[in-house]
Image (tube, rainbow, N blue to C red; front, side, top):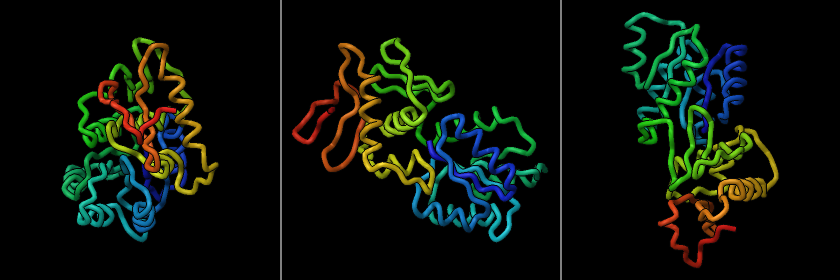
Length: 235
C-alpha cells in the first residue's frame, strides 16, 4: 500500500515515514501542497496524510485542488487545530478523516486501514482470493490454514495484487506502488519477487493464483476463474 505524507515539520515527517515503512507501507514524503501535486502527477497513492498549516500551499488549498480535479484518494488531516469548526472545515473541504496532534501511532494505523478499506469497497481487514487470506491489520498471510512467511516487499506486492483482484497490473504500476518515488533498481526485480511469492503461496496440491499476461503484467484470480488461454502462464 502506497502512502503520501505531506507535513512541513521535518522531524514529524521523518518519524511518520519511518514508522509507516516499518509497518509495511510504501511511503513518499513532501513538505507542502505544491510539491505534493507534483508527486501525484506521476504516482497513484492509496491514501494521503495531510497537514493543514504549511508554507507555499496549505492543506485546505491542496484538498480543494485535488477534489476539484475529481481525485478521490482518501485523505487524513493530521493537525494541531482541534476546534469543532476546524474539524468541520477540514471534512467539508474533502478530507475523509481528521486526527489531532499529538496522537497515538496505533490509532493512525487503524484510521489508515479504515480509509483504505472504504476506498477498495472492503468491510473487514481480511482480503480473500480463493483460499488465500491476507490480514491487513496483522500483516499475516494464510492459505488453506497454513501461515506463509513473506518478506516486506513480497507482502506489499501480494497485497496490491489482491486488492486489485482480476485486474492486470503492469510491472511499472507495481514498482511505483511498492517503492519510493526516487527508487532505481534492477529491471527484473518485480519478476523475481513474483516468482518468490508464487513459490510460497502455491502450496502442495494447491492451484496457482497469480498469472502472467504476456506483454501486459500480472493478475491474481480465484482458481475457478483461471481458465488459461494462450496469453496466460504461471511460470
